[in-house]
Image 1 (cartoon, protein in one colour):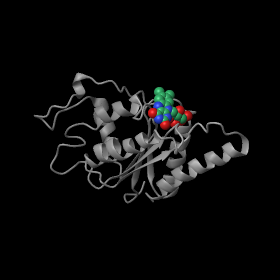
Image 2: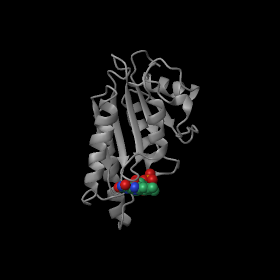
Image 3: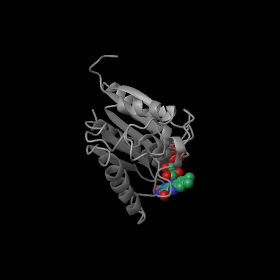
Image 4: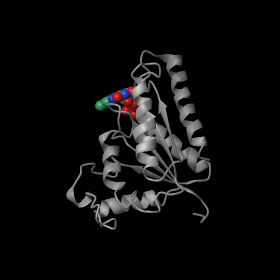
Length: 202
Ligand SMILES: Cc1cc2nc3c(=O)[nH]c(=O)nc-3n(C[C@H](O)[C@H](O)[C@H](O)COP(=O)(O)O)c2cc1C
């Protein structure tokens, strides 16, 4: 590994290794590697990450140097080592799946990700890649867009000192009503949209 090689952390927020989410994450990782990144893939389910809250990982707002669980410190070290962070996940109930939400809740903790005069995340970039079952023109997709732009891009990334954050949605991820060549074309388009978003990091 060269000293000058930037690092990308690809975070997989799905329990199935044969999911579309996993395929999109793998493709993003390969593209980042081909573009010169050292790539660290963090598959939260494979890693056995426990998204449940616990007392050891509760923030103590009187002590930004609190020592959290070993698991949290191991995970935040991987975040700190990254120049770009790329969470890939399905949209569930217009939000993050519990696995990824719990990772943010526990690992992006006070003193580790926010709460310092100089953000520990300063200078990083972020790309949220969301797979959404709804079609882009479904009226409820406005909720998905609001979720990406509000809680994810502003509420988490910018709040933690990462203003250079983008969020992209791959709509109609289950290709509802499509078959054969039409379905193949749809998935080619979804992968192309993910590629375009990843390429903006190169
Ligand atoms: C519990 C659950 C909640 C879901 N909620 C939403 C939702 O709010 N909006 C949406 O567009 N799709 C929703 N979906 C559809 C998923 O986004 C879709 O199944 C996923 O993107 C497919 O990718 P995968 O094969 O990687 O799971 C939901 C699916 C599940 C299982």
